[in-house]
Every structure is written in C-alpha cells, then in structure tokens.
Length: 64
Image (cartoon, rainbow, N blue to C red; front, side, top):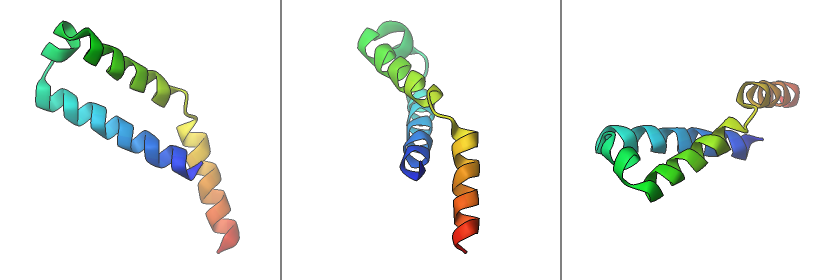
C-alpha cells in the first residue's frame, strides 16, 4: 500500500508538472503523449488513495 501511495503521488506530480511545462499542445497534437497521460490518469484513478492512506496510518499507529 505504501508503494502504491508513493507511486500515485509521483505520477500525479509528473503529469501536473509536464502539463504546466508543455502546455496543452502535446495533449492536443501528439497522440502518443496524450495516450500516455490518459493511461497514467486511469492508473491513478484505480487507486483507493484515501482508504489506503487511512490504513497505513492505522498500521503505523498500531506499531508505535
């Protein structure tokens, strides 16, 4: 779960930073780039972020 949370954060940041750096043109004009962004977005949406982070907090609290 922790690895998933770390990967989700990294993916979200990468997509956000890339979008800000490159602007909208690659999403509109580069099908390969747009497909990769879409695939990453779908991957992140498959996460149960809040539930997983809550469980990680519970596990950390139990081991403290």
